[in-house]
Image (cartoon, rainbow, N blue to C red; front, side, top):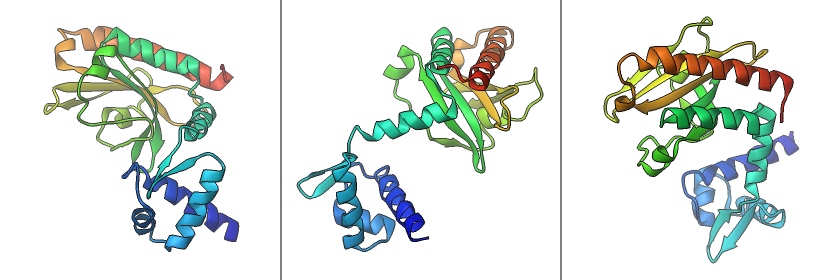
Length: 215
């Protein structure tokens, strides 16, 4: 139990950096509601292992933390092959493609790719891998749909539309793949005749990659 509690505390400290990239010891202690001495002990351990660094009175996580993220992506099946599929989708329709997995709060983004134009545009929602979308989102709506069906959600404030389809035969996992594009990209029946079939093909391919474990 003591070891479990230590792991929980260490993880909570690392998560606290999400809201403040270069916090002081006092700010971290306040965020995780732990004594300063306890937080300092964990920070020093992270520093020794290369995951944290001290800059005057402030702390930051180091790029070595990415190693954990890459390991997690591999565990989730988000290999280079899956990332390439998402990137092709994003490039084909000048948008942002997402791979999502069912989450108690809706759907969590486990893979994401953006077209060059989207990277240059100010993305107000500031979503990234690890972000959770609500049940009302297209990506969440596509999770448990029968094959051949798709979900759609419009974002009038940002002039965007999102569509998503289920990823079939992913074992016990419930996945969906979707794309968000500017409304101006959806001309005529392009969404129904091209984008949705492209998503369904991508979903089939992703399913095969995840099942076989292609790297």
